[in-house]
Image (cartoon, rainbow, N blue to C red):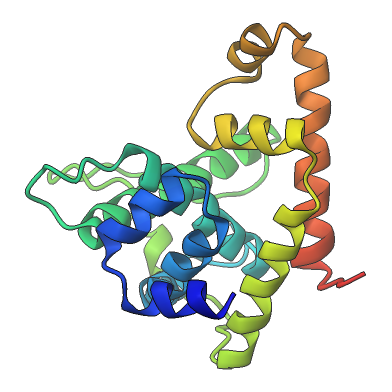
Amino acid sequence: MVEESWFGLRASDEELIERIRMQHGDELVALYNRYMPLIKSLRPQISEQFLENDDYYQEAMICLHRCVEKYDIKKQVTFGAFYKRVLRNHYLDIVRQQLAQKRRANYNTHPLVVDDTGEETNHIFSHKSETVYEDPQYYVLLTDQIKLALSHFSEHERYIFNCYLDGETPEMISQKMNRSPQWVLTQLRNCRQLLRHYVVNGSNE
């Protein structure tokens, strides 16, 4: 574990990405910690009415894993710039989905407005989160809880969750595994419950 931690601190993004793709879970956490300042910098821009704090950081980890799988090292763009763009768009998609759901439920919400520049969600980013966690120990605890949750995934759950992070639908995963979509959805639900149990509730049982 000491060797892994040293490697995570000294390795480049590209080296960490290669090891993550080889299923080295500690390197994913190391990369997550490396980009925590970026993740934190976007937190005040997303109101907690759209995404609660623990869910916000969980989504950052999910998005990071997807970026690791999709990132093309040969392209002339740094991983940090790539992750920032994808993560911001990921949060915007979540906000759009929630606004659409609230519209369908006839809640009073601010409509999306597209201006001449094509920016359609500037008003969303004007909402400041009421609570921004600045205690470094909070993030150390959070990453430990994520690692603990992942360690409790079964082999099937880990495989399905990785496929889901790669953007595959339950139907696609069910075909690959020769299982029913409902069975895959159940496994995904278990994964979500484990993450919530260890990350949101802060349980270390």
